[in-house]
Length: 242
Image 1: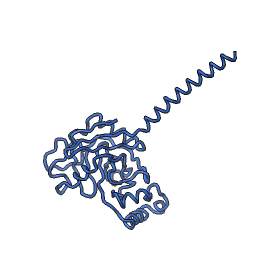
Image 2: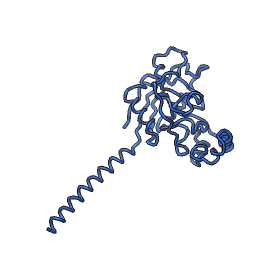
Image 3: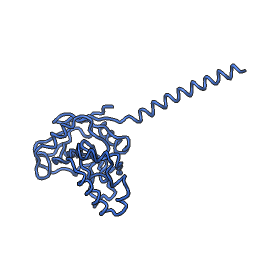
Image 4: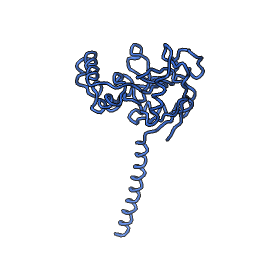
């Protein structure tokens, strides 16, 4: 009888150990951040997508798998600020045509994760319509931008925080997660650069892990009065690197 109990115990232990191992693997896979290679006419950019912003991550991966972005332009480029793409209308746009209105027909709820996730150089973020028609700050279903930005001083960062306090009241002075820059964010904004004034207004859902030099090259191309490059900068294809 004792032997049977021991054998039963050992079998249960083995089953539990196997379950734990499988569970660990599943959790490990869940923690892995997907990466996407963006092949452009100026070179390749590799981005990783944050698990902290699952709605934006999954939507972006869905569009990549559907080849939605293949052939679109970086249709809006502003030096020392950002490069923007994802408008499906840009695939067949004539030279000089104004772009930026094309979309998927749906929006994505904002997923702000400040101060941990912010607009440092290389940040991948979602474009959106303005506050006057979009007070919830919901993201475009497809248009995105990659931050080039510039560096800032402590005094400039302090002024940004003060302006938000003036605009939003006392809550801005006490709510660090939305209106104040973390120590790491301050360090990055002063050394690496970025667009700190966009924090808490546009959803950052990833970052460049390879090809920042390509982003820099694109950000410096000549543009027209509508910020469209005079010579098309095209996304040839996007590939899931997972």
